[in-house]
Length: 69
Image (cartoon, rainbow, N blue to C red; front, side, top):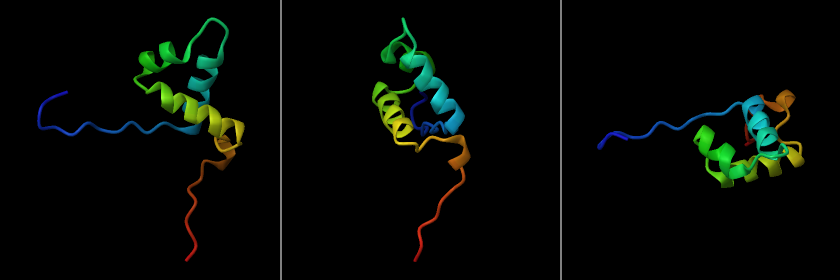
């Protein structure tokens, strides 16, 4: 990282998140290895896994939702 420059935040699509969680869950793979390979914190993969289990990472639900006032 260059001093004085803000680091850009990576935006992951639902499809990409699901693919990374699937990779981390595969036999012979580990969350730490996948996280390091793709520049994601292991805790983020665990959070995505939890969201997947709750049905929050369905590609069909990728549309933005807005709070009602």
